[in-house]
Each structure stands twice: as structure tokens, then as C-alpha cells.
Image (cartoon, rainbow, N blue to C red; front, side, top):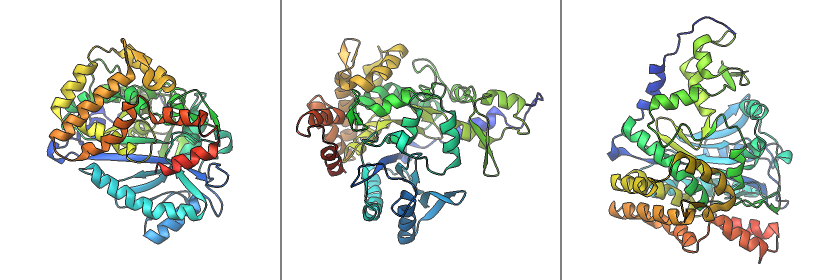
Length: 442
């Protein structure tokens, strides 16, 4: 390691990564990243990357038929791209659709439906079904190979949590991306998104059955994130205190580095230094670049991640209109000042320790989790009311996407609660019946 002062990258340059995201409210859009689990329809095993019926072969066929470009790592297909839309692979072959953000949820739905109309038949020809579910229902990480992407191998060797392999290879989630108009607006939304995260995790819990058994958790996916790497997961900063872009940058910089990249080749750092130390002293023959910081920020996995937009990351994959209900809640809350005021009022008496406690209790107890003499279900119903009123006021018609989650909350349950009841009841712990049900929830 060098001991010389390294001045090739300044904090002011890093700050521009965030300030360039300022957007006029009239131009606000909403984005989605939508992961699903590929399983073999006959065996129920997770589908492998390799082989004639593997995910790589399906993606190659899709690209040829629909004129998408390959995304490769050392000549291995790790995703596809067409314009701003991508279909990429997570570490255990989970398939993620990420589309260009749109002004309306209707436009996003239309685009995702169109991609699925071409993708799912090709996968089906190879005996693959995509599940809208949060954790692998049958295969576990010991039987799920990493895809041939170099960064995933490095991450798998580095991440030290006891469930990090579960997180990487078994789980699927939905992420929502929202815009901001200024640093003040970004920080307000960032803090509120963090405060909403345990309630959203509970509402959309959808991963109770793993490895063919009831885990005792409503969201085993959320549990896996609690046990992945506390240095880079959880909340970024004390969300009940004042926070700024620079504070977020400091959180990223104080996190141990996993690797850097030069000329397309990863160079392992393995947590030996933080990015802050790298900025001061360099590492071996390397000096820091803005690309190094961007990689470092992408290798941090907080509940809410700050970019030139806000990325909210804490939801199990869910099916049908439930995935769009996630977007509708955030659009209703974050793009209306009255709704923001009402959410702040609803949550004003909860402190940082309360949110930390919720984060650890919600994966197991879900909507029944108690906090300050109320249940998460009580708070969730109020959150939905605020979002619905906002969407109705703005007359976008997108309030209809809330109907699916309202029906669950009206019964006092989440998707996980419904699955657990059926699992112990009419399904008689038959995994095939559960898979059939999840397939119908597309």
C-alpha cells in the first residue's frame, strides 16, 4: 500500500453524481427493477445458467428473435439490452427486468407486459417458469451455481454474513426508483423512504416457504439481508437526524472496499481498506477515480440507496398488480407535498431505535409486529390511505393499482400470510400446489 497523498479524486466531483439528478417536478418519473426466480416446471429445481435448457440459452434465443444486444462478461452472456431497457441476471440466475423510467405506472406495466409476452414463451419452451416470489421455494444456495460473472464470485467470497449466499443465490425482489428536485427534497424523501421500509416489507412479505418447508418467517428474503454484511446493508446514516449528500457519501467512503476494476478486470481489495483510506493513500499501484467511487457505491446495499435518483430496495417479489401497488404507494407519497407532510406526521413519534427494531422484527412477525402500542398493520392502512388520497387528487387513475394491497390489508394479511394459511390447509404442504398458485399470480 502506498503512503503518498493521493489527490486524483475530490469529494466535489463525487457530489456531482448526485446533484445531476435534480429534476423539475413536472418531469418526475418512476422506475422499477423486477426480479423473478426461474424454476424448472417439472422438477421445481432452480434453473441453471448452463445447458441446452439453461438461462443463457434462453436469453440467446430471445436476443436473436427480438433484436436485443448481449451484455457479456468474458464472452458469457449475463444480460440483454435494448435502448434503456435491460434483462439481466442476478447471481443465482434470477432474471431482472429493468425499464426506462416512465411518467405513469400504466406505461411501465405496458412495457413489462410486452417484454414478458416474448420472454416467457421462450423460457417455457425450455421448461422454465418465472416465479413472482421472494425466495427459492425448493432449491437452496448449495444447489444453485453462481452465474459466470466475475464480480459475483468476488462478492460471494467476501460477504461474511451467515445468509449472504441465500441473499445472492436464492432471493428475488422489486425495487422502485423515484426522482427529486433538490438536495433538500432528496434528503426528505430519502429519510421517509427509510422510515417506510419496514412497513413496506411487511405489507409485501412473500417468502415464507423455502427449501420446501415453512421457515417461520413472513419474509425470509428480508431475513437474509439482515445476515449478509452489516457494513454495507441496513440504513445509511441515522435516519431520524439531519442528513445530506455529503453524509451519504461519507457512509459509502467509510465502507470496506471489495474490489476495484481496471481495463475490465476486477482487482480484489477484500475489505483491507475503506474508500476513505483509498482516497488518502491509494491501493497498491492504483489511485482513485470517479468510476471507483461509483462501483463502491453500487457495492453498498442499504435499504434505500442514493444515486442521481432514489432507489428503494426492500420488497419481496410479488405477482399481479401487487408489484405495481408498490410503485403506486411511492408515487402517491413522494410526488405530493401534502402526502409527504401527512406521512411525516404519522411517523413523527417513532425514533431511529424504533425503525431498527422494526427492521429486525418484521421479517418474522410481518404485519402483526407491534410498535408504540400499535401494529404495523395499523400503520400500513394509514400509509395506503395517504397514498390513495394523493393519487385520486392528482387524477392519474393510478390509484386502481392500490386495490390489490387494500384487499390483503382489509383481511389483515400479507401475501405471505395467505401462503402460510394455504400451506398448512388446503395445500397440505404440497409444494406443487404452491407453485401452481404462484404461477397463476403472474
